[in-house]
Image 1: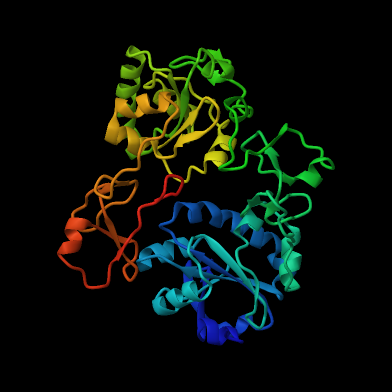
Image 2 (image 1 turned 60 degrees about the horizontal axis):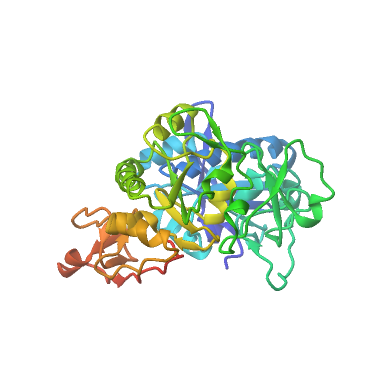
Length: 431
């Protein structure tokens, strides 16, 4: 590891000048003696664009008090100078010049940055104090700044005991256990980002109800799965439905449909699911679906659910379900039997392949056989050769090119770099 910031970042950085709206070159020596956060981000990344204003407010709030001890350097993952320049205007800190692309790539590899935004805190001698403090800023842990300036880390943890779940990336807002180990409790109001460990739950008063999170991959009854949902909404109306009606009348299985109006692939799949569901109702199959929305507004939520003949979880009430099923992208259809067994994590793929036959299998409490290598759909992955979307069949990935995948046919045509066959995921793995 480099021992000076000059060795790590080069001799020159840039800093935005508000007086003339331009960026000026400065010496990296200005970082000497400081604790420095390397901020890996990109204008093209929505999550980064959402996070940067929070970091800017956080930084400005303490900069006058801590400016001799703390600084931040932006390490861009953007592909063009214009995007870099536009994005850097939002930042009250320094940046590695866009022209130093090789160094930017080297830094991402050195600090093992696989996802952005990422914030790596370094001591004045370039030793790592903490790997990723994005969650610190998101959680508004103001005490963290003083710890950063002292080259210390705010958080602590312990070894997990048998059967205790480790909530990676989740921090207790009271005692700063990171990650939370064991039972996790959170606020039912999605605008209130509060997480507590079991110990702090008994010591904390909160303005909203606190609920226990369901541990992913553990089996729960349908009643337990719906415990955090106050009620359901009738299709195309505001009528409230009791959640227990979903699993009454000898229902054999329930599909949790995670989707959103703004999502193109969701809008493409929903009519297919509606068609199959209506056919199942005609055939009196004991299968139900519940819509769990990722929409941002009530208008889009209500417009979208009006297209569906099944009830919906109220907007902003599906967070615990989303966490339990670990729905990292949409559309997703998770199918659960009446006794709580997860029958499918890939219901979208199953319905696309098998149609009504998939629902017939689920109502018998059974799982579908995994698709063959030629049948498998790589959800949300396109072929960079022929633009097949999604890739169906075997998928080949290039680690040299950035985010580059080919289908089996395009792989036969050759590629300038080595290609690796991507193993087909198991039922409970993401693509």
